[in-house]
Image 1: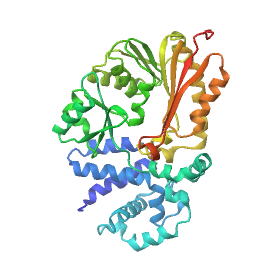
Image 2: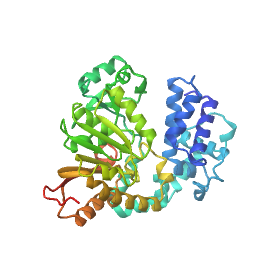
Image 3: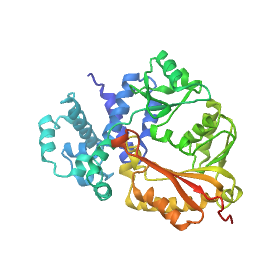
Image 4: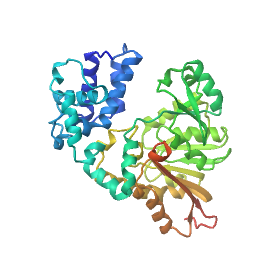
Length: 413
């Protein structure tokens, strides 16, 4: 494979942006794409895959490059010449050699093999911080090894057909006409899985609002809410609204969805997506502390709480998260999740239902949160159903959802 040094220079500089400047990998890649509009599909693919692969394996490749493990997250140690060596370790692992770049001449296949055989630390091999590896062992025991292996693999790409305008079968055929090939997904009636990663956002099918990009795990949430046309729904942590759009299609554009978020920019994106999808029943509102919940008290037939979480179930998509996350941040999120669940549950009518969901794999963010809430409100709430998806078993993102019902005789304050 012929490599252009200027392209690899961009990979190295992008890694510097991520690990030294603290920028998010997806934003860095997006910025570099815009800065180099003449890159072809091959260059864009090589650049994005190299950046994501190295971010996933950062600790491992840093070690293979012969550098001190204690410096893997030290901004002062992560200098451009060292990042070149990390790239070389990655490339040699895949291809056995590198081009004759002066920056990487001292990184060799023999050196890589010696260090591979000598590594005693499973957290280095798994390319995660020690604290996270130990947390996984405590929580999951022997299952942690296959789980983290799956989380270090690139994510497959799933699409959700917009059933207001098409079906998964028809979408598959239309995409094939644009040489985008996909397959149906058992158990997910609206889903397609791409056979090969492609930029689907330039397709005519996307411009016509025939689909959204949405992981298989996420596609299970709206049906789990038991959505029907004509009901009133609140999506209390809507973000850019992938699940709200799915609910709108399941409701056949009949009823009302109020999408809440603290970020106006995300809600603006949801409005743009709604217009492209032809979903007319979504109303967006920025959350006003102390006001929003009061205004919506006992309003909704269904409430979705896709709460802020550690994101440990989606490391395949956001691999830089494991380098930014800390135990203190997880503790803060657990406290916030409990508060959100207690506060926003008041929006549900007696007889109505609430789905609490995370893209985490940790019981403390999932089952234990729900159990604590039910224990605190046994006369008012009951658990109807719950599910957990595991990346190493199910092939989707790690995900949890619980459906709770507010009892008909609940005392409403």
